[in-house]
Image 1 (cartoon, rainbow over the protein chains, first blue to last red):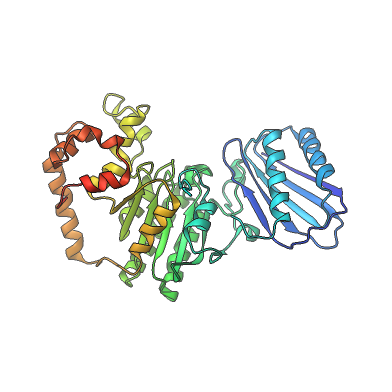
Image 2 (image 1 turned 180 degrees about the vertical axis):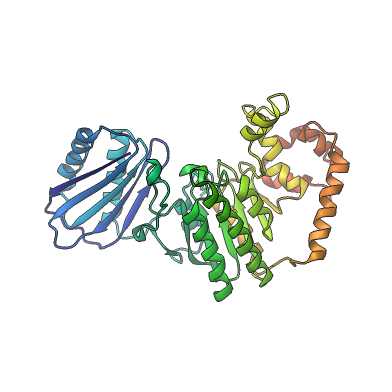
Length: 106
Length: 291
């Protein structure tokens, strides 16, 4: 298991203050929890992953996500059970989409 | 629209089972009440420890609800997971909902947490029986592909009502456990048809371990849960002795059968071999009266 932390300066503060959870900590899957972090000006990622030694790949996937969304004042917490980079990207986009929509979803 | 119960996550099941917008979670993921044991073993934990609990409404009536996430550790009951279930039953004693609904999907005790998980399961059983003793009906809804086994299988049979789909499975020992303790000749856990014939919802329904058989559809589970609201079964020594007598009679009647199909035939189910192909409503029509 490894804990990783990344932070990117962003511009886009989400309209809603909602807490969003997507995904499940299952084999090849991950859960992503997005919470407001007011006045930080950044998108902070805290990751706990079952796989060691993939820090540079995580950084690339998260930077790619950040280039697309540029979120600010947000904390993203991840519990990962060996998801592939593609699955991580999809889950992050799913979380961003749910943050953007107003209706409560499971 | 049909929404598969089996293919939904625990959170989706809760969301679509209850009245729209009525669910409010207790100890949600942002509270981070997580397993203290998994991190020590180098295993990622989950923000909700694999179980969603909270309050909601069903056809306007207040209910408490819990849903186990089968994809996280096979729905295994750890210390925190179990404590959340116990807390929900204790809340039921204080608030007297129309029912406590447990959407069970679990392989039983989370082995990583050993004794803490075992103790948790026994505490859940005690808390469930306290709620029943207070006249609050407890309804188990079983339709996840991981089934309901081990300690949670015991918990399920402590409840007032058991609702299952044919995808759901209910037993004490799981197929792999039986195979490794008694040998592959006794039970081949790779034989999926055998496993479902022996532990699946249809068999449980025909035997009477499951009260309501539904199709794999959250709306169907919702309907069955609604039917069970407010109808508690008596929790008494007489009821327990009746159940023990039924179980003893089952061994006498079916003890020499080597396959579930033989059991169904002996019960008087016509053309028993076709049971596996029937949907829930066809099977409900087929169940012999009195069984």
